[in-house]
Amino acid sequence: MLKNRFFATLFVFMLLILSACGNSESDQANAKEEKPEPAELILATTTSTQDSGLLDELLPIFEKENNVKVKTIAVGTGQALEMGAKGEADVLLVHAPKSEEELVTTGDAVNRKRVMYNDFILAGPKDNTADVSGDDILAAFKSISDGKANFVTRGDDSGTHKKELGIWTAVNIEPAGDTYISTGQGMGASLQIANEKNGYILTDRATWLAQEKNLTNLQIVVEGGKDLMNIYHVMQVNPEKHDMVNSKDAEKFVEFMVSSETQDVIESFGKEDYGQSLFFKYTE
Amino acid sequence: MELIFDGLKKAVEMILTGDREILEITWLTLRVCLMAIIISSIIGLPLGMFLGLTRFKGRKIILVLINIGMGLPPVVAGLWITMLLWRSGPLGHLQLLYSPTAIVMAQVLVSLPIITGLTSSAFQQINEKMLLQIKALGATKIQSIALLLKQTKIAIVAAIMAGFGRVIAEVGAAMMVGGNIQGDTRILTTSIVMEVSKGNFDVALAISFILLTVALLITAALTLLQQRKRVS
Image (cartoon, rainbow over all chains, first blue to last red; front, side, top):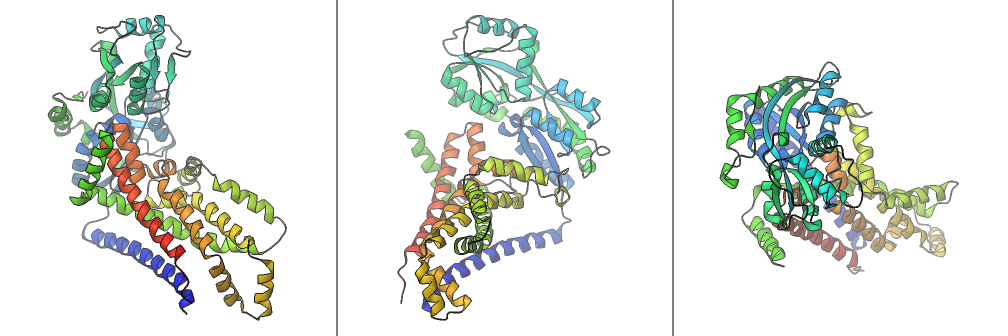
């Protein structure tokens, strides 16, 4: 029988793994007996709220208070809104007001509430080839286009991308050509590319602050203008239009985000690490 | 260079201090990958054996499909599984999207063709004369299968290793169907992607060392199993 030892070993190995999987499941089952099984809430949101670490701060509080397990899907705002429109998520936290309004008009999203804001900034190469500064983002975009300087765009239908396209439209320029670099990636990856290509890039401040240490060739060139405000809204996916939406907890989440306790947490978040808030209170 | 050193230091630190989160992520990665490989092996080994030993009409077409499947991009597999599991999709009522089970499904989809294809190649190489001889000696079906398995042991373990390599390295599908949810579907590869996008290259590097260590240990164990001399 020694000949079969190889397969016997393999068999035992597999059994062990299977039983290991089984054990952990029964552990979970035991844990569940003590507390009612938490409901699941799918939150579709933008990468900036996750990459900045804000959600790690907020979600545990919400989960504990309501016995809910929040499943965060951090994607671009475009995709998050699409998940809402398809009924694949229960609640959305995004930052592209115009597109959000469309979703409310179609009836896919309800109970939309303003939560917080931070601002966009324009980062550019240290040598500032297009010579832009101040707080006028429109003038800056014109100079970059006129000076044929590299401009890096997310190109991924995210809130930041939508914002950037809005600015190009406002100055009547259709960005194109070799100097307009479309990455199709998230904010962090796009910043890295701008850093390597000596390009200008529109970014939200939270991601910038978190990434600054790796971006040795970039600096903030334009900030503070009224056109650069970045507003976040939270909204429920309409349960009447989509099956299987967890509207009970989605409603609680919306309330949670605009409650004054949560707003305080949002505003104090980041002060310790960056010496400034990454997001600011901004309820209606 | 300094970054690599920092990453290595951080990896050792994470393991020694028993960083709970990273241990959980590693454990989940192991469970998910091994589960996928076990399922793929249970289906793929007999299927590959069957395709390798028999001749029937349409067999070549199946082999072509399996060979294409070996190169199936994980994001494509991820996309298919995602659409299948959407709330509005055919399996939506199971509510499996963004769960470890969904990751296992996607990983089975990418590793099954590899295991099946490589197994069938192994069995196709068996000398026809030997097959005849086994029959002539009056072996029962089970006896002859056992004998053939022993003949192809090295190739079979190689097939399992190749499949394992595919699933442990896989990130596109796991990101899409798992969603990289903390404490739920975050595995080693998706955490690396996330840490990179956060700009934490040192942490990303540290996790990559942990991933490589896990892959090394399992591959080494399988290689030893494969290379062990037969006792009799």
